[in-house]
Length: 332
Image 1: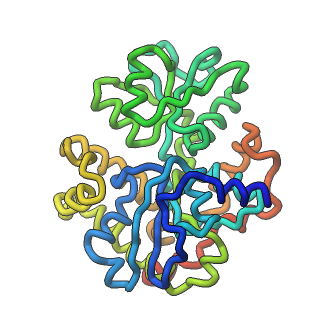
Image 2: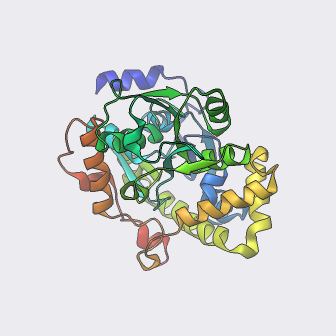
């Protein structure tokens, strides 16, 4: 644990303020600069819902879930958007990070190949090179779990190659550097838009693995309940507003204010927003936006143990998430 803390202190995420946040100030650390992936937050920010609740929210983009968790553990962000794999790994090291809102009930990741490829299933990736965005990102843990279940061993049966996001992955496919790609939703959309048509070969079992969520350090949750409640009320309001087709033009404007490049191609932006809304809609709205269940966490844990991402199951898996705020956030 001391080694981990030392590593955090030396990490290169100095772009975040080193000062403690004042009451009502919340920095949200995210693993990439996409605003489309954060529709509820972007909507709540743009429509003034956070301001109405008395919280000041700032979004800081980092490089991957590992960096997000480092920022949270160092107190340089209050809420983060890591993947389940990196979060469980951090918990296994004693980091008190807790998932508070399941932002993407459906998986944000998939393994894709070029359309027309002879590869039609994960087991056919033996001897192949699979592109990934970052070495410690959620997409690599997701892909490794699939390949392990298919009987393939990293370094022996397949190789990961860090090629960056969807734009950079386009070049990887075109040059023949990679045979497949572990893609997030926006990566796949970018590849398609740039002429690299894709086929999703993700096994059905893994398509329901939930994607990146919102998390915070447990001490922060314990000490800042009113801020967390205010943040979540605005968040849920933003999620519902963003899902209303009548608000699409305004939503695109809010996205553009955070990341102008994402709305330069309006047709592509609309297509991506449609997919993100599908992924961020609760399976059972009666349980509330952000609700989490133990079975979904067990599925993630089992796959990570099987792939070697986790040495062993956690002693108590229930501590990695909480639904304590869900009723308040959803106005129940």
